[in-house]
Length: 235
Ligand SMILES: Nc1ncnc2c1ncn2[C@@H]1O[C@H](COP(=O)(O)OP(=O)(O)OP(=O)(O)O)[C@@H](O)[C@H]1O
Ligand SMILES: [Mg+2]
Image 1 (cartoon, helix red, strand yellow):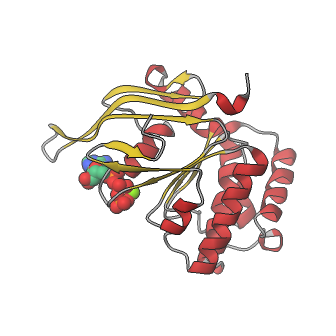
Image 2 (spheres, helix red, strand yellow):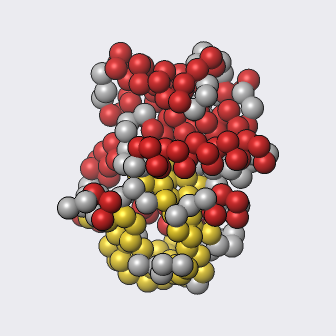
């Protein structure tokens, strides 16, 4: 079968409720949401603030569990995995780029890129070589030994891209990756993400308020009232 035809993420009838202030079940943030993403696809998820976009990404990336429904990532039913097994899925199969890049300020650029390899138990010299290659790929070859505090916002976000890719995930989840960037840096990051999607067949799921970034993805879905709709449908 053509790998492009296979589904890498399958979310079915997903409900997510957070506990309210007194620990009772709160309202459904996601309410019967269904989503199917093909391997190698690029997808934008848009929707108002508070509609549940980060919640959806956290479930897709095994950072959290649904209240009900099924999340299958690369053939694994995440609801059936132990906490340890979920941690393995997170570190080996998914790359995350957060809105706030979450770089460790006391570690150099190179060390930040290497952090996910520590948990994955990778071979050190191979990992360091790959980190150097990725930093070159994102245009930061000369900055490996700088601290994040000395970088521009766009440069920090590119370090976050390199870090997200270090363990060779098949899926890259990005939450507002261009939110804090000026137009030129945002365009450069969009170029980098679309290039990774095309050249490396990396599945790309981007949450964004930016219409410019959303337009560059193969499909755009809108999240509202806890469900997705858009061109191509939610499923
Ligand atoms: N850990 C939590 N505990 C309780 N409620 C939460 C938690 N995380 C999110 N929520 C609530 O769930 C809803 C959806 O939040 P989420 O962060 O997914 O929205 P979002 O679409 O990513 O918004 P934004 O565009 O502002 O980032 C919000 O009402 C939020 O207050
Ligand atoms: Mg959010």
